[in-house]
Length: 263
Image 1 (spheres, one colour):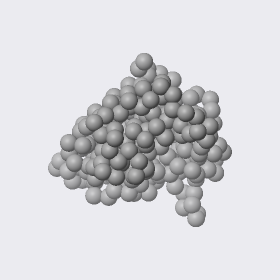
Image 2: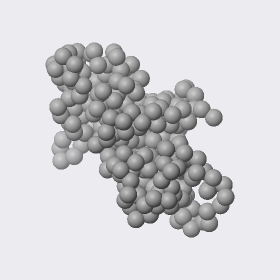
Image 3: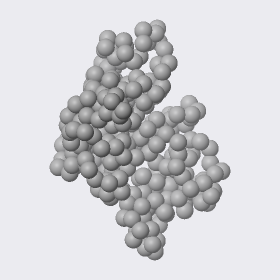
Image 4: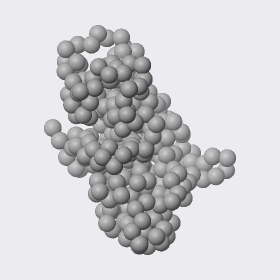
């Protein structure tokens, strides 16, 4: 069943957080709907990765709330608890079990959301079938028996995404999923993200503006811990404020991505 665009899956309300006296998020308000693929962009120090840290419980804000699924406040909850609620995160560097096969990685991940009980529970026929569906979804069915260490960089990225999908999470947070990929791998990843968003909500931190333009619809721009602009990608990339602080004046001459690439 496809996820219908409607009520908010994520609602960040007036969130602030500082490190060593430096304000990283400053009363940020941000939301996204169910069944949405949202791209999050911005210059170095804008607060993008910190926002993901707050959503997943890695960092606790000094003020504000983060509501998931309409009513569940994630602030103050442990990271494992947030995963069990249905929120998963993928970092830029793939975190897979390199000595295990692709299929074994997915089998292990299938139990992650349910903690130790899920890991120890025997792999039932239904779960095995689910793993096969995910292998097909991420295009790795032909590599099921291959060790993860034998995969290309792009394939390891797809495997880690599959490790989130096999857990039936409802909100996926992805940090630069196409970094280091070839053009063909980027295109295949963009198509995979669009398919994934038909069933789940996906928030992507990305710096590759050519990729954002090709596969994005709604884009949110952060700057100095606040929301600078938001809307359709065509409108956002034409916003003078976004050009000034992020895309740069070279954008008008067709440069596809900014020179600075931090979070």
